[in-house]
Image (cartoon, rainbow over all chains, first blue to last red; front, side):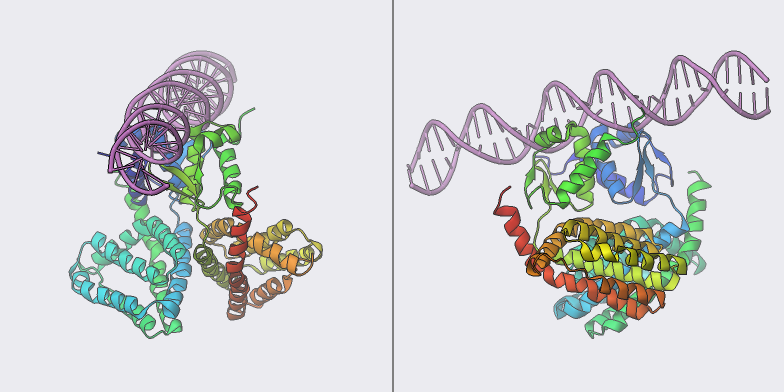
Length: 230
Length: 230
DNA sequence: GAATTCGGAGCTGCATACAGTTTTGAGGGC
DNA sequence: GCCCTCAAAACTGTATGCAGCTCCGAATTC
């Protein structure tokens, strides 16, 4: 009977999802009263959750004007991808130098077990979830919780674009999503061999490959967010 | 007469400073009522500011128990230093590849102008402010606002330890603080020469040198926070 | 004396109310 | 038609009140 999860937490989770999915359009002003009604909470806990999301970069805030959705521009997305490179490459570096062999083997094993599912999946949502899970586990190998925390935040804000990107690739490939496990495998092999340079450069080129497609994905994202209007 | 800065912002700034300086002791529970009286605001804006600081990692939060100061452990500080390396090295990389010559020259110039002040300053606070300013400007050269944002956050949380570290060095050197501009100069020279490898490795060793002293600084920080009790 | 129970004080969680600011749009001048 | 003006509507900023949870210490039991 004790409420284990507070209202603020519930509202926060819901808002984070909404913000990640651009349920609010870029730069759109957020109406607190309306939103509080939708979420079934008063403005007080709602605003607490909104403030957290501002600090995390999902929303912006202007005095006496309230909360706004973060903007969506090519340069903003570029910045996020570039920051991801910084964080993930350093995480790989640490994984190479100090991750226990067992943990590395476990990640390799995870990759093997997921392989069939990865190859057969066509749903971009599922693919992205698996991809994010892999990268999160990889960050865990670094043994550095700050790097994990930052990566989680960056991935949340970049998520929508990655989804668009995957959908675009699926559509171009004719319904078949790209099961690009080779890059992941290459990274893990580099770590297992404790070959820092190889692993880091594999990671760098893996992310940068995606980054290069991002501009186009942003363009599509824009059209999806503004044209259909539901 | 229009209030340009809101109460929340004012409270937030005050709290951030307090949290950075460990005006709250590690893991200490924060009493909202008492704090709101000290800060001259009601609990509503106070809690909004506290929620931002939770999202930024300055504080933690437990359901129905409220807000707590972040812990202070060697491994936590290590994580922050390691994340700094990741962020700053990547920033240097971008500075090498794409910062305008003029901006690089401006930073070198800034370094030259600050040199006398840096050499003569004995106040650790002032030294740290100059050091942080240099690193922030360097991050600006990357042209990536996410990297700047993350660095600003990391520096805020690591600040107290760096201050302890500087004080320790001053005391050991007999009142003379260490005007280590050579490392900074080396980094900027590397960038100016567009020598990515040299600049990055200079940055890496610069930060890691400090990181190695951090464990000892944490020990001192602990004694300062718990023994004098005022 | 140590462990346990329990009641109350104190604190947090949240809804609500209202003051102050921004936005909107109707009306009027050009 | 276009651009001001200005007052009402709408929204944000913050204080306050109360319900419910947590915590502490006195009383009780062993």
